[in-house]
View: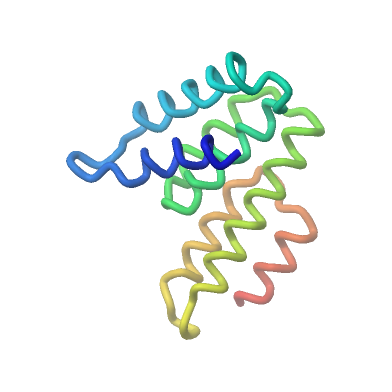
Length: 129
């Protein structure tokens, strides 16, 4: 998992030019390819979760939402997406140093990625308000 997270983090660190949509999608494909060839026992949803988590923390909410909406939803994918979005929202909230911190706005944008926010995500957003 650390290697997969490192792949996504490497894309996030790309600065000149900054990582765009194609870079992120290529990284996702590479992560799945690595899983197939070197970590076959690892669930594909775990790979997707690692990629999505870094993507959200980097503020690529539209790409995350597009990818989650384009995939045929399954119970596993929905559960992974909810867990990852909730984790990223909490990281934004916990990093806020005051009530007007932009991290709180990012938490709201992050929560909006879900088609229908779960009770846990809704509760987290009530704390932000």
